[in-house]
Image (cartoon, rainbow, N blue to C red; front, side, top):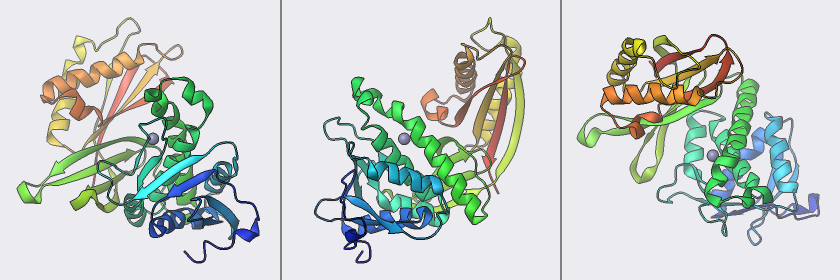
Length: 327
Ligand SMILES: [Zn+2]
């Protein structure tokens, strides 16, 4: 920490656009996740809580990470707020502020460290998601609507930012390109005392997995290959909002695979002949609902396993791809 603070003189100007509260050790952990990949030297003032850019240190592995941090830190009119800890109950990585009058993003910094240790770059990418999200929510426009809508307004840009930073970091290190995050869900394995809840993040080219441990810690973060279980097609019509009855065998096949493989994910890719179908979401929901009815599982507990992809031009249909994490 000594190296990080105390050299504010490099810029001479203290800007207070990214405020981080937490123990000095936790702040160090956060800055460590950002500095090397961004090529920025960051300082933190324990009194004002302001993070500052105090210099540069080599070529950034992720130029986008550097650009975004500079945008956030150097914006004098808007203040992003982060609080760090290792024990906040119910916080998984980051939590968007629920209170508009106290818009602080709660982060469990140990989660980011554990993810980055197992999957290099992933912790940093998730961290810039949280920072971007909180910063985006300082836009006065976001405050014109009900605060309950704020997260869904800013989340997509945070997600795009994280995907871009991760792809740059993986390219720089020569690691496999994971692709965009599609969906996130959990499954449990083992019995009784040995029962483990595992989080799955399905991405375009592979899975990220981690287990939940005591105290809500995350452990054993790792990547896993996509193991294809099946792919099928349901023909659709713009005149239908739901699944045609002729698709019953396909629905039964999806249900059987999901029952047999609790870790499996489902990607729904819709095609429409003329522009985006207004009923594409209805097609997706109807497939999901009919499968859930057979699996005998509530919609809520299975819906996170599905990724709904934006429509592509083609004959009206939904292509369904089911994979599970290997080996
Ligand atoms: Zn988010």
